[in-house]
Amino acid sequence: MFTGIITGLGRITESRPLGSDEAHGMQLTVEAPAGYLDDVQLGDSIALNGACMTVTSFDTAASRFTVDISHESLDKTSGLAEPGPVNLEKAMRANDRLGGHMVSGHVDGIGSVSLFAPVGESWDLRIETPPELARFIAYKGSITVNGVSLTVNRVVDATGGCELSINLIPHTLANTTLGTLQAGQRVNLEIDLIARYVERMLTAPGGSAECHAPS
Image 1: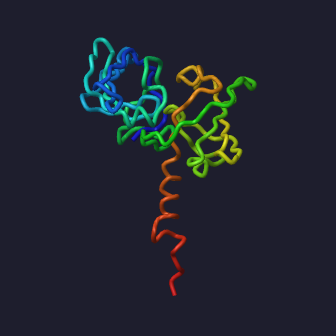
Image 2: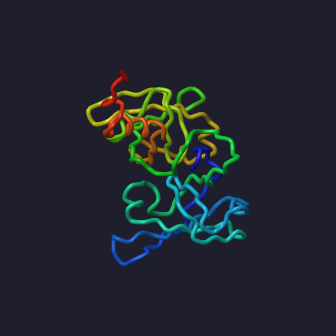
Image 3: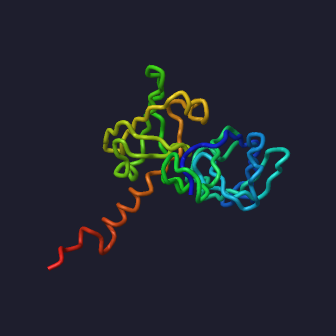
């Protein structure tokens, strides 16, 4: 589990195919900030742009680690197939503060930035979401964008999904990769964990829609 509070800015420096065709995944080499790997062990989970990955090797002195990412994960995420900056978050400890919200590290869909513009001291980020995610997004609810826990300020429904708006403060821009976003760029989205379970309870056989008051 994660919280959506980014703990470091990393960079994918190398992506190496794990096989001879597209059915295989890739091994990513990631540079982390100095000292970031001091408490990391082999097999630990670190989220890259919101996608939970397993550390397969690491070099503490060089602040570098590797992860193996499957073809399925590459197909369902954005920004992990080639070198570039990534948001990093280590898995939450049981005694950690929950500064953001409960995040699983499983990307639910890919959104597209429709607007990224300054408003006063902050920036207005608007994202068009896939239609299958629209029902999970609510005003003042939580959503994870490239691994960052954020609050939804506005939701506009449309036939092809919805457009959500988020206000980004300078601190978030300075400490995550979101400050480099541009219109048309694809981003990883994870919906609120509670919304996912509520939807399942309401639609599964035996859910509340089928329940009757006791006699």
